[in-house]
Length: 308
Image 1 (cartoon, rainbow, N blue to C red):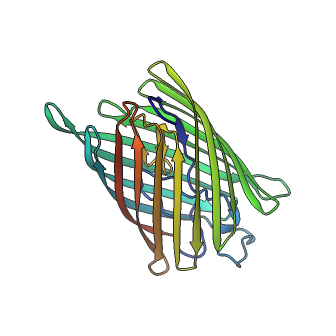
Image 2 (cartoon, rainbow, N blue to C red):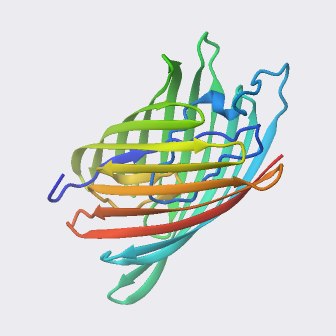
């Protein structure tokens, strides 16, 4: 994809719920760049090798606090920024889960009149429920309300159906977004396989209308995750068109209509006792704006989860 291409859409569903066993919550990494792992395996919501079907499993909850630092290199106006986020998860084994999350992002801009800071807000509410069918299957949905000082105002929704088919976890989702009066729609196919060592691939196709100019867009991604009872390591990559993007489960509402981009991410989670877990990682992205300017974004992030 070259030249002046006005964007595409990438609306990413939440990457999964928090496992009840072991006490190592899935963090919501406040990573405003790379997509989180697909997280499509319902069986990994509990400890591998343990029973996931108690007579009446209790309700669990987890709260996650996170922070991120952003740096922009060779961007036309942006120089840096930061993010603060909080998320609450509630779930009952594999039967259902719900979450509410809030993230605030501050981006520093360099203008002809001097430096200024723009604040973006993202309030998200979603959940997942197991379907009463003979095979493992689920439905999920997430709604976002987006707000900014002058840009980044809108809303978004993503809904999906998934099932285990032939040893693969397959999820088909659709999303729509309105941001600053521009719109986008997209469909996403995600496939994941494995438990202790888990890999995933996804492809997204959609359309975007920005200032009356439409485009058809395609993006893809993949990653690997290595899960251990006390820690987890994840690496992922993403490439393709994007715009009006809710990245990493909506932790940042991007008010930039980037075109082609590539990104990579690494994330490490470690359990700290029975009810605490910490995570840290970093991402890097190269992207091109509609004005054909190339830039790089670097992010470091970390957080702490507590489950009950």
